[in-house]
Length: 250
Length: 321
Image (cartoon, rainbow over all chains, first blue to last red; front, side):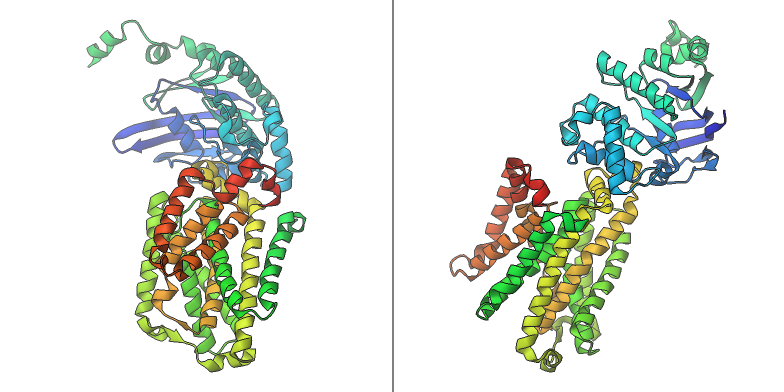
């Protein structure tokens, strides 16, 4: 397996805040890589750097063997790297079909309108929205909007899909369906890089996991390695006398 | 592709009516009424490309019309070019100008962009008012001889009328073509959520610059034709700020985003305006009434007439676009 995504020593500051500090990791083709960490650890910021919304202050990002560090988000999609948003961004006054057609039109294959519509219908079917293609995106429930995010990203025919908390806010049935969908996506040959707070889900889905804390990479490895890593237990999952420990080192 | 849209034929029918009605009985006063309606439709349709399609409110859209008038009149009188060529070159020149303005101000969003468009209008007006070759604040006059190649003034008025109707039809067809294209879908995505559109792969910077420039072309051509017909131009009538604002009222009234919305709103508002302006008791109040109307539309029918129609008859969406 060759590395599809290679993040090297990436750093990002917002004023005095060090949001991401010297983070390196790689993602192999066909892999599901999980990204976890406490709130404010810099997970979404890291996503935004990878797909070009933010420019890294230092470090490089290579995708499919080519450098994409300084490339704008719309060009990143053309290279085959699509994403969803934690806070969903539906195109409210367009139909579901149009929403997903945008993804197909301007994605990796840059399809014309007619071909894009065909792809969009197919993808909407795949995520379970196939019976509602002509309703406006604003009328969807939160679960529906999350599916729409995934559908739009998939319509771009990516090689790598970045999923930012697609399970948050869903009920248990919807979670099970979404997990099933992510597995199917991977089985269809698309690599997945996902942020998730839901431990059980990310542990069962991921091949490997990267843990961030306060912008730094704390650990990386198979799910069972990560949960038994003492740093991770301390920073993320809680440690009984963490308060004592912190005051002592100060 | 476009030939399969029923609405395309409706546009042709509308244009044919504009051509036929005043011709019937050589009705000059009807022609003068319709020419104002046609200009309103041209301005509103092209403004719709920015406001209704892309979600960028342009308060200074009239600047394209006025600049087109100036360039056109300059080429036709001082350079002695023929009318159609002058108008086309005016359109191209103003489009290039708009592209440059666009690159300057399109990185702004929302209210900041809207403010910048007012700034552009003021700046251009100030420039033209001090530009010697264009007669500074007194403007330019067309010598009567200029109509000679078109067979005298009488003929020239009819010819410019037909040309303006053609520009009107083209404006609506352009709106229709863009609406049903991949380019249009990209604009709609920008309107709904520009950040999301970019992440989906839409090159928003380029798309916005192109549509801003495109929305300048036909209004500039219309300006060149209209001021040629009027035989004179000066900065205050070329860059009439009120007309720019009224264009927005027209869009809100008819329903922004819909091709027919722009046209319908423009026609209705223009008729209302001429009625109010010519009525002895109401002429001072026409802007009061326009303001009241805008308030009512925004409060009770935010989608305008077409939005209301689409709500009661969703199927109409595919026919009357």
